[in-house]
Image 1 (cartoon, helix red, strand yellow):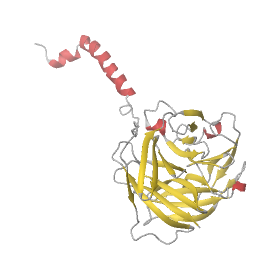
Image 2 (cartoon, rainbow, N blue to C red):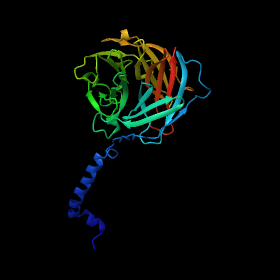
Image 3 (tube, rainbow, N blue to C red):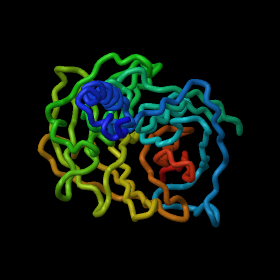
Image 4 (cartoon, rainbow, N blue to C red):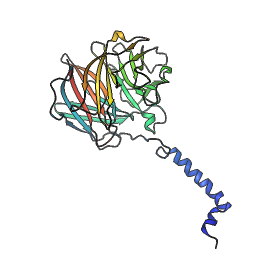
Length: 333
């Protein structure tokens, strides 16, 4: 009887085994996990969501810069794909939280009770089986129509969705966004009341970030674009933006201090200053840090209530079970 090693090494055996291994390798390469791709976990409809009141250690301060704390909650769920919220919009008393993997949470809190709806974007760049294809980082909603615009990093595209977030109506990969770094694209997206939009890149070389002013629908193929640059506070990166009732732009900027410790600064930019070729910063109005929160502030929205301007912030826990997702509400003074 020939040794086993001899049998395995025989030419006939190798000829039979090579196609088998080639087939296995081909299958593994198209399965996201084995191909080095981070597979996306879709948040299923009807997921159980827990909303709990949050008070920071030592209680809320009376003021944080120009912000007066109103209330805050933590949001948790055992469902796969929950968390990682990177964008926020509020319309008709309902918060839309969008994660950086295309999952969304619709949340309404009234009279101490919360109701929720969960799901995932029905379209987007690429095939949609990997997180890289659904790296949704920014959100703007037209309150009149309910249509939503989503900025995708890596693909450097902006998509327009129907009010259900399930149907992609149009999309565009602006040439001006093509050089934006793969993981530092349109982290901020804001819609002005006149229908214009601003998008700001998260990171770039130097002290300023490339930014775009769209003269209309940013998913429209013919919408004119003007370029400008934004200068965040030193050491910070823009993570979202929203429009104040005055028409000015407010930008949320966050900083990573190492080992899951973050702070955030809010900056107001006059609307009149945003124009082609401008390089501009803004006026800092508040800094959020421990013990109020040391989480990663990534989503920003503005509402009006009884004549007061309310500012809402959500955090990105990177879908890590030991970290919390917060939704915080402040009155702007």
